[in-house]
Amino acid sequence: MQTFTSPTELHAWCMEQKRLGRVIGLVPTMGYLHEGHLSLIREARKRCDTVVVSIFVNPTQFAPNEDYDAYPHKEADDLALCQAEGAAACFLPQPGDMYPQDASTWVEETRLSKGYCGAQRPIHFRGVCTVVAKLFNIVAPDVAVFGQKDFQQVAVIRRMVRDLNFPIEIVRAPIVRDSDGLAKSSRNTYLTPEQRATALSLSRSLFAAKAAVDAGERSAEVLETAIRQTVTAAGWAPDYATVVDAETLVPLQQVAPGASAILLACRKDGLRLIDNILL
Ligand code: AMP
Image 1 (cartoon, rainbow, N blue to C red):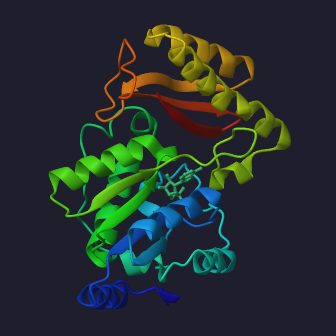
Image 2: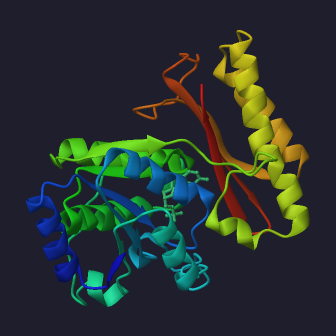
């Protein structure tokens, strides 16, 4: 497996891969890799000849009060995991490799990024879109794989790709969960055992909502109220619990099976967790 820190060198290598006729897949991550990330690499491997994994904790998507400095790292383990999964290259730039000191250009999606997590984190998706657009230009992938775990993020990226004519297929890979239902996340490392136990209320409430929909429930209000009650009883304060159109993220009053999702974000003790489910 090749490793790169220089965008220019990675770009030259990717261009050579293209010249050789290889289909390139990109898996953008912030590292501290877990099974969720590895499932994305496997998905990319199924579809592509050459898989590039980026590991970059992107400073521009963190607000000053967020956990940029505390974000967990384990670079040697991450590299071993990427190699074991058959990635052809890993890209580990430093912030200075990605952002000139006087960088003054942003990529901003202005609709899907505004609600939900965007309402709590006003600069987050601008940072995500900017860094992902840069990665797309550096790697020029045919396919890029993102996780359903960050449902709004994939919707925003898909919109950016459509609006800016990036010739890239965006794949949304399913959420990988621990056996008890908790969606895997690098930030789960912040949870105390007590917080982790009560955090199961998020996935439990979403599974119950899906079961209710499968049994015929269509009212978003009924589903959202039940979710709020479940997480609140477990000590988590819902930021939002919303039935949405799976593509546009517009809130729905009635579930449209096959085209809806429930987005959930909750807080407790300064921690924030997100989860979601397709209906
Ligand atoms: P992150 O390192 O948190 O920026 O995540 C990198 C990519 O991995 C994103 O596309 C995430 O949606 C995806 N991802 C994170 N956790 C999971 C999970 N539990 N299941 C599937 N994909 C995930």
